[in-house]
Length: 389
Image (tube, rainbow, N blue to C red; front, side, top):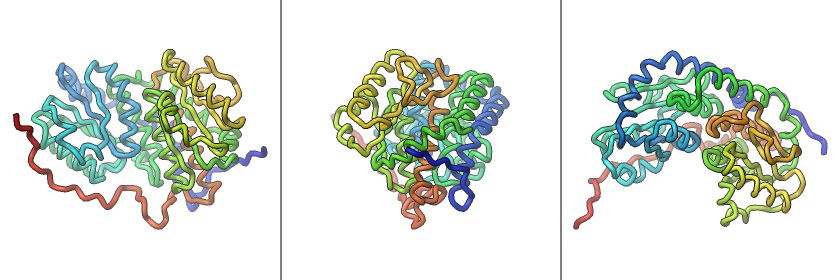
């Protein structure tokens, strides 16, 4: 098979998207400095909240921003010792009285590239309406968005503004996604300062620099009609984000889906055929890793050579062929591993888009899907439902 190498495309055919993927290591270093410079004020905001034994932390966003919460949830729960849940703004807005049924002290952590989507605004307002005690931490990339402008008017609020360059101009969220994931991990101490940030940035630079070109080109050259991403634990959220990137940047031309390693056998495995490619994110957790290795063995026995790829931080238990290693990531938290690992999915999505003749910066030229969601009507809240006893 002859692989085709891709150069960074021009702005006309997708340069914003390519540049925003490539800039991520630099952006992460900037995020590290932002958190370091904000440490005293940020700790002053978080410390009294985390002292509440019954604090509930809700991580929220829509689409890619919701997946950010899914990726970091377990890491934040371990770090804080508090109840942490990832609930999409779309679920909050459609049934706020269910999501906020317990009137307990709550920290709502909002991830938002633009900070202007109807659900981001409404979720904040509905939390205020439903809860007696709620504080807000917004992590956003747009200094002019609603969250950045209006949230500071609330007494219990803090806005973490990401570097201006992270407010992606391309259609799909790339550097915005990873900058917000890194920011919340740093904010809660789940990533340990400059040294770990530098390691993650160096790993991403290694992947972006071209060492993965042949492997990624081989995946794209197969022209899969279906591509499945699998991941366990925190990496299930990464699998969901990876599938969404491919759907977005190819304008839906490649059917992409995601599941957990164990969940895949329970129906979703029906998607497999000889035109399917499967990419498995392999966890660093020794126990959970057993299930990832099991599904890899099973899939490789039933699919053509080259159709199954493992992306991992460690070679342990994996063959050399068909394994993409993230350098320097042997022992890191899965939520941190997701940052350089997602670069692989971003590059697959970008190059698949170009191979199909689609402009990654504008994969939906007719406007049926928009960069900032449109067409959402937020309906007035009814009275809280009560159950008669």
